[in-house]
Picture 1 (cartoon, rainbow, N blue to C red):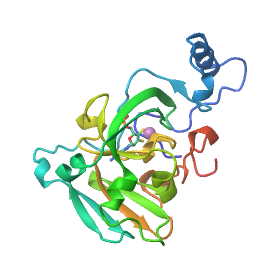
Picture 2 (picture 1 turned 180 degrees about the horizontal axis):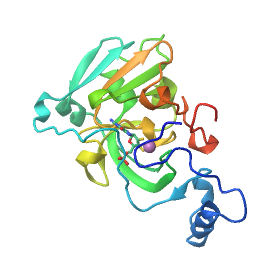
Picture 3 (picture 1 turned 90 degrees about the vertical axis):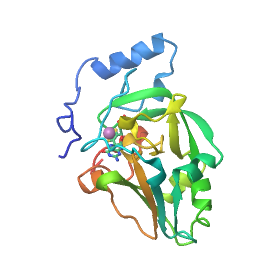
Amino acid sequence: MPAEPGTAGRPAAFLTGMGFFDRNRKALAKRGIDPARLPPGQYLTERFPVLQTGGVPRYDDLAAWRLELSGLVRQPRALSFAELAAMAQEEVTVDIHCVTKWSRFDTVWRGVRVVDVLAAAGGARPEARHVLAHGEGGYSANVPLDDLVGARPALLALQHGGAPLAPEHGFPVRLLVPHLYFWKSVKWLRGLELLPADKPGYWERAGYHNYGDPFREQRYWED
Ligand SMILES: Nc1nc2c(c(=O)[nH]1)N[C@H]1C(S)=C(S)[C@@H](COP(=O)(O)O)O[C@H]1N2
Ligand SMILES: [Mo]
């Protein structure tokens, strides 16, 4: 089983008694936080862990940065950072869940709705069903188009906690898909490729679940 850096594969199950995860849930209830917000097998952390394959890219010249909108959009094009920053910004407060088992509650992000970003490329063509989000240096993650432009808020985040993204958290722009495991939220985003059919991304090819719903505990292929 492949594993993200800093983890040792599928963690041992807590099969008997009241294990770590149950205690964490009880502690939440005591603090007046609804434990139902914590997906199965997750624990709450106050820290903001940093997880990625490879190094943190540097963008000294943001004027040269582009986001490619490609594939099944009506007018494929590249957006500059200034163009993104000039679009309507929305703030969301969401819980995030990493497949390595940490969750963070009430994280605040500000950015542009994916649907508005795609509108800048004339919108999705009717055959578009899936999106492959491309990060700097070859990382990618696949998400159904509906999960980005449907009822739930998927953003291209430019800010976290009221400030520009930190370099290690994806500066200048990251995808934010809070209702899926956090590996789908591609940092250092460089492109959205709209496709007629699904195409697995970096971790999905390596054994992680294709969809990745934390509340259904879709961590690995067979889950
Ligand atoms: N470009 C890129 N984006 C990425 C990753 C990566 O390796 N490269 N890792 C993903 C994983 S597994 C997680 S849990 C989150 C971690 O985000 P954070 O470092 O801001 O906590 O980023 C996701 N986005
Ligand atoms: Mo992750």
